[in-house]
Length: 81
Image 1 (tube, rainbow, N blue to C red):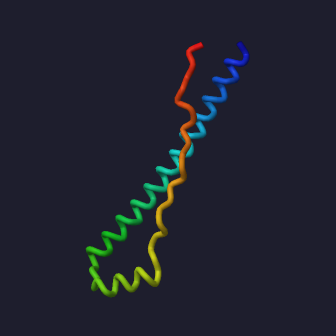
Image 2: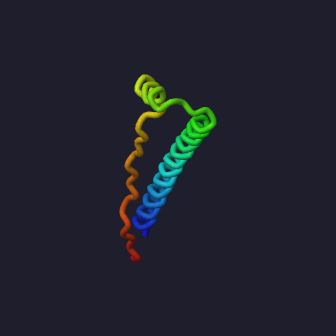
Image 3: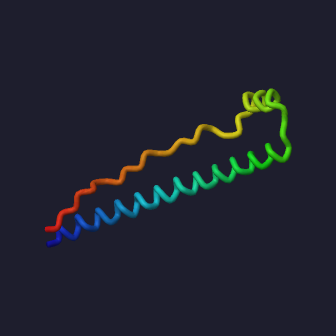
C-alpha cells in the first residue's frame, strides 16, 4: 500500500519537473521570437543593402543558434494496480 503511494508520488514529482522544464523552454522560445520580430520590424522599416547586412551578420551575429534541451517525459506506462 505504501509502495504504491510512494511510486505515485515519484511520478507526480517527475511530471511537475517536466512541466517546469517545458515552461522554461517555452519562455525562451517566446523571448527569441520577440527578438526576431523586432529584428524583422527594424529591417523592413529601415532596409539596408543586402551586402551590408551580410557583413554585419558575419561580424556580430544577432542570435546564437537556438538550442532546445532534450526534455524527457519519463515513462508513459501507468499501472492500474
